[in-house]
Length: 312
Ligand code: FAD
Image (cartoon, rainbow, N blue to C red):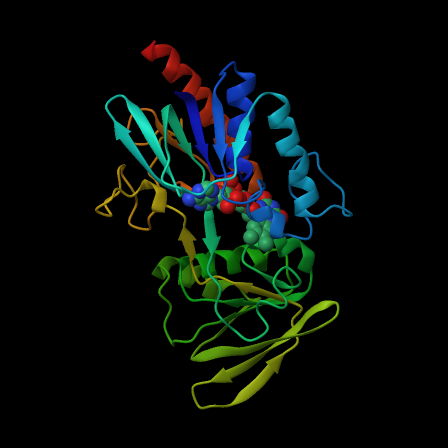
């Protein structure tokens, strides 16, 4: 019987593993379907993690020491995909892809989320080289430069507002003539002089060279093709929340979820099921940053330690 099963080895899962093991739990296993590190390993640079300021290092280099630190303190790692978590009596069963069931007193789910791609020509080629899905992460790279934003929902317009404080101009491209975002957000956007709304238009292609994105090719409803020479493209067409492990065999969630499929937690990362915790990008109102995912993981692990003590 494990003290704690951690599912997902991104910043939330690794921080949870560090705090759980250093906090005295003996049997803690991290189940990660790939190499530990999470989404940030796809990034060529991380500039906003406090205390880490090394332009030579990639997201992969940055996360490498996290796992070493955890394993040093006794975290065990199984490279396995988890199918499902279920509560059996007082304990949990973590069912692995190979069919094996692992019993645990507590579970912390840290399976993260995946930004959706728009499927535009050139998007994959220039992802991380000018195409971004995170204004907080990458906006500063375009300080005083013009950028393009793709999307028409709340996230797209909120992120456009964030970028408008850093970039010279923000061009929001939306395929419809009205925005899905809240009317108050649309009004705030319309009041910003350096945000320009381009409606009834799609992005046909991301243009670039060996250095990264150089612009975008646009096509409007009338079929007219134009080009904008902006070095950054921010794509906000939604996130897939990796919540499948929380569904039972009938496809029902085992804990309370938001309408967007995020796990509802309190400030201690407790879900509606005692002993089950969620941390990082998978939870409601996640800022989707490494620093906050790590903070969540530490909070969840400290709560796990208290929970086990209370149950003893
Ligand atoms: P994730 O990092 O998504 O980790 C989840 C892990 O769970 C993954 O490793 C996945 O393999 C695993 N997993 C999922 N399902 C299962 C399963 N069923 N079984 C086993 N394992 C599973 N943030 C910043 O703060 N600064 C930046 O500069 C920055 N740049 C970014 C650049 C890019 C290209 C991307 C994609 C993201 C960036 N982010 C940045 C965001 C940041 O990476 C995320 O907010 C953070 O990684 C979330 O951590 P997490 O642990 O919640 O989830």
